[in-house]
Length: 485
Image (cartoon, rainbow, N blue to C red; front, top):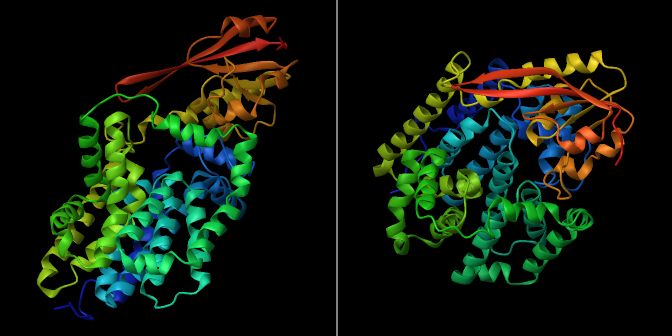
């Protein structure tokens, strides 16, 4: 028996709407009061947003575009850079709600899926930082919604396939992991007649044609730059290095419990043996959720796998759970799931708040030195005539680009070999610093080549920063009258 809508339910629509807005405002408030310095990846994304292109060395361009828009509307503070994060998650929640309503026609089930999805531990934690997973999950949720409209409509129009393809493209430009949804779609086409009937017609051709037309600028940028983004994605997974490790799949699956939620992930695993008894809609949702996890689990046997690489399927998981728990006799499981999500999310927030004054608890302690380091760098830059800035580490260079952004002089990332290893080696050149005195930030010392390229050099300052039980050491050198070799 389907669980009917009740105005007294915790998951009634008015309560859900108010709750989701409170969560949105709370997350924006927490971003403000925690004052977490940018992670070096966030600083890198910000630097990309200052020079908008169709691609970058290690990631597709969409996150940089989003940060660029936020900077234009709000400013370049850490809070403004992170402001799109809770907003995108909030909007993704709306798509999860609408997707569930398509399948259940039930406000309670739809509200349940929306609020438990929004309280997902992975979302709660990542709401404090800007990552490519944020737009990825947003477009994955939108993809689920349009896909389910197509599935349920008797004769969906071509416009839905154009829209689905556009959403897929934007997700792909957020993170290449969006491609897992394409694999899930192919599996669904093979196994389900009604899916084949809807897609293997001219409408499917519209999807493919739209994607290939819209992806051309990004493809052309990669072509001009030696396909650096595609190559980096392959290298990042260490696909070329075969290293059998049976522990990696175990730890990857374990990580999914903590990202997705302990109890909801357990409930999904509990339904896998019942797969044959599920209706086709539930089977399709399960395919979209499990396909990324299965593929990455297999890949992790041979190479490394980050815990968040399967996040693209998470919206489908919560839609699936809402459909499966949409029965009156399962109301307790519904509340257990909600309470487990609420508890984990609350624990994450408490740990982050306590970490402000306790580095042992602080998950962001590795980046807390950034502002202090930038103060020393900025002071020295202001004291040196005809100065340019150089660093030999991508992380340090990205952080100084942001935190010393008032410096208008020339800057470049040192590349000690001919190989291009990051975006700054691709886009900056130390030959452009010729004739300047260079303030050089390093964790070691100048190389022999650097010494040869300067008339003299000296150590300006040694810096040490405590990070939990470790010490991070930096050296600032002055390289006089930089020469071209």
